[in-house]
Image 1 (cartoon, rainbow, N blue to C red):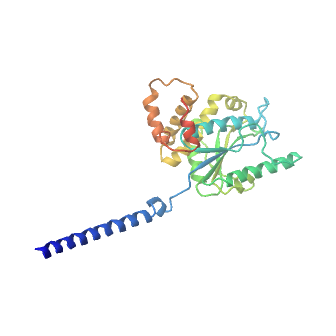
Image 2: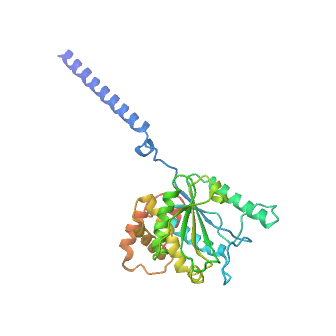
Image 3: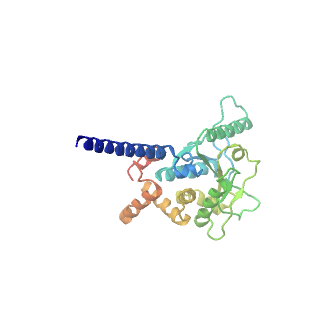
Length: 295
């Protein structure tokens, strides 16, 4: 009898040891195996949008017939773009947040300041892991004052063309409804987009040589529309959503953020948008700080 009990005890111990060994090996295999996205090469550092309002300070860029300076319009649109992307949970870095040039000390001539400013912008972009550059500009063609519309340009880094296509689709709906434009590969003569190691999209939001478009570009409403379209292109590119839906969502979120319209019956939709845009996710990052602010 004692031998039978002893054998049963040893048998159960053996079974337990094998079960424990099997569970241990399974756990090790699970934790040591890379996630599916990483194994397939899809793993990426978290995206940081580097938003670059072109020109600034002594370098005002293009000037409209009424005296409107490009650098100020660029900054106004870029700040709105930053607000929308941060509200949607995206990390953003600005190359400048005021009407200044970011050249290094010791520069004396305007040429030296411009060169130093561009080098510092490139360094800022290249220092950000997972960076995507969005540079905001205005076009000017005095010889053809009727030309108008917003257009996206992109560099040769992988992913830039797809982002530019998504942004251009949203811009066509928002700013070019009568005649859409197509994104264009930017010339390698453009120092900023050529020198950065990140995907870069340069947006020419409109033509300061067109008086009617200049008036629109100076209004907060049109600046919001352009910023929402750019954010929509970025969001739908990342999340695979329809650009026109994403644009409407981003514009609504921005208006709510700016208290430009009452919440009213939009609360349920806002919650859905927050879920889609990532604004309801817990976690850190610059976007989290923006999301915690009351609407």
